Image (cartoon, rainbow, N blue to C red; front, top):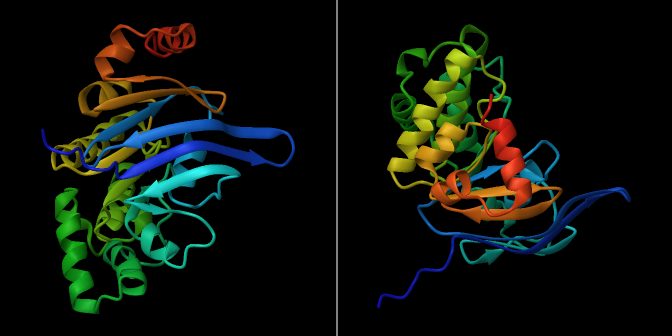
Length: 250
């Protein structure tokens, strides 16, 4: 039998507290295999976004361990920025620089973080804009784009860094309903291309189609995890059943 490759993300007994009162993560364990799509669902305040932010080291864990591609993320790491550069993150809000064109937005981090020259950065930016289907918007400013187009620019910007992992934190929640599909279609294409992805979303249709693994979180804990078929068709935990009964009615 072939030897199973090490998970690209390994989280061990992860706790995160904010002040004395908020215990956002309460001992989360998670393994993500290379090339897999993991979708995290759960009610607001369940710790989903905090978990993503700990994986990207935007938040520092209170206890526990986060390993990315065989390296542990912690404050002692000399190469923490190198590790983080391998992780692309797309937020609810697009975080584009309003005074820069679409092309300039995508080139900036490549030049600063990856040290690419202008010509190379521009070539990569154009390629990624084509990938997300809006190459004709290269010289537009963010204010001239729809919300769905801005989110696709944000995805292209993350992809231009050649990440090994993409994290999506409710990427469609700020969009009008008619714009959601165009963003989810880009994400589906990434999944088909074999990108390792962790997606926090309320889009259950996307989870059914794209996920290799669905995780249900509540109150800082992983309550249940399994394939989309297991979680949606045959959940074992009462809390999962209640959440799905509420969200699938809408």
